[in-house]
Image (cartoon, rainbow, N blue to C red; front, side, top):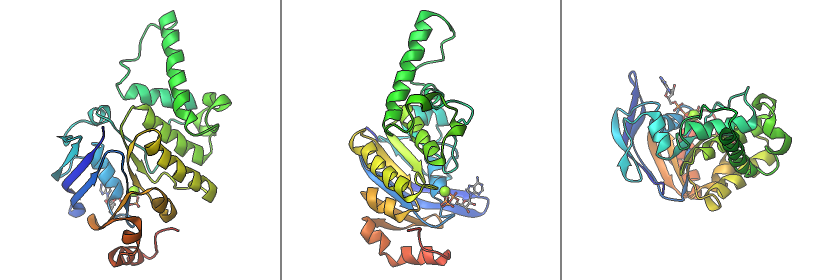
Length: 261
Ligand SMILES: Nc1ncnc2c1ncn2[C@@H]1O[C@H](COP(=O)(O)OP(=O)(O)OP(=O)(O)O)[C@@H](O)[C@H]1O
Ligand SMILES: [Mg+2]
């Protein structure tokens, strides 16, 4: 199960009110998109949910229990995984190692065992690799086969984004927070990631909150859209309703450009 409920969520940085009394829910199995101009506070919302910062006011309920004040690893252990706007894959580790590390870091597989070289350790390593491969298979052939053992620095930008999602999946989370998954992708890759995000919910059962600037992606994946401007929710509803909302159009025009189409 994975449901998320933000109520009255507020965060200030110095004198700047960055998230302002935000109410937002994501129901089990729902895909909700968080949109808004640059600096609207979207990534800060992710940082609050994942425990990077504590909110100044308000509450965050995960499956009905507050997670405010919990350390990041505990929030991750309870089933929240995220990707980053600026990628955080380990460039010097291989593709497989990146996914295996995420699985260990989730705390769901216990501490790294220290009896290297024993048959039990080898069996465990083989099992972890098989699990990693299974996660990566979600992206078709792109990250398996010979790529499993290639360092992440050798991957294309789009493949690094895919690898980050595989790392989030490997933590065993039920709730995925995806920060601009299509950023830097070409149109074909963008179409593919739009389809994959739908499959993450339909086939893999994730509940998803996604930040995205590309309105084709938002239109393609969202059950609901929430628009932020200066930390305030200015619109909420279907993609069609939010995209046509005068306050949303004004917010994007006010920053000198419409949402990227
Ligand atoms: N750690 C921080 N310390 C101080 N100010 C911050 C911090 N993180 C974010 N801010 C400020 O909070 C505001 C919201 O930033 P945030 O990164 O959440 O916006 P965003 O909606 O994700 O924007 P973008 O679309 O550009 O990614 C900005 O004014 C930013 O400068
Ligand atoms: Mg951001």
